[in-house]
Image 1 (cartoon, rainbow, N blue to C red):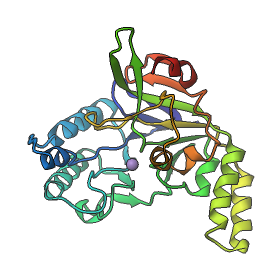
Image 2 (image 1 turned 90 degrees about the horizontal axis):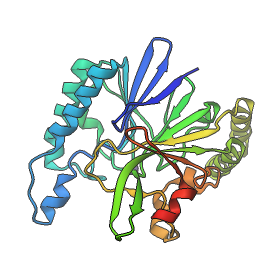
Image 3 (image 1 turned 60 degrees about the vertical axis):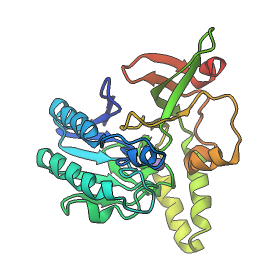
Image 4 (image 1 turned 120 degrees about the vertical axis):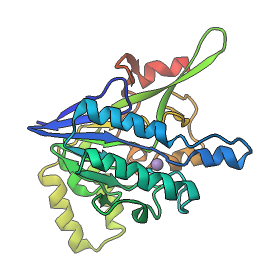
Length: 282
Ligand SMILES: [Mn+2]
């Protein structure tokens, strides 16, 4: 059994299996200030704040491994000048505290490799496994092996909840999403996706690989570690704009994740209700 526990009140997850403890964070988007600066608002680098929060968590949780679940960078393909400075410095400092660091690549992590110390293990977007938990960023399909884990963890959508009060004011908060996931439906969609890419012989091998130990039954979506970022209100009533649909990634689009019945929690652990219940408030 792998224990899965949000670290209150942080956007961080602690996984425990025997004496192994993995601390998971997602969506740092280091260098996001550049967007402000391009529009004429200049603020100092916010990376020290992200770094300090990380150091505090490491001290508190004493992890044996750190897993970054994608979108370390903010610029999608390019490497901006701020990132040349901030990203190596961030990882060198953290690496002094925890030697085992894995980075699962997200959609913003083009050309990230040269910025990371050599000791850091880079993992493709198809994801990593820790105990009974499959971890991937969420913009791309996971590897079939991950479906043999009972829980999946992703980031990418920066989930928030939006609540409108009787005065008409709207507040949004970062949230955790815990959604039921139909493993068989997910396996079928994944195999369909793979069959378009590979020949039928390797497909039958994959088929047996997934079916033999299909276990996945729930999906956790992590809040972004960078708390300055905007997010997508998970209880939004109107969806359907092509752009949003494309953004949520293949696993949420596959129809195997029951978002309506997903449980929504604030970072301090407060249970708010299901997405369906919260839709009336958005
Ligand atoms: Mn992303």
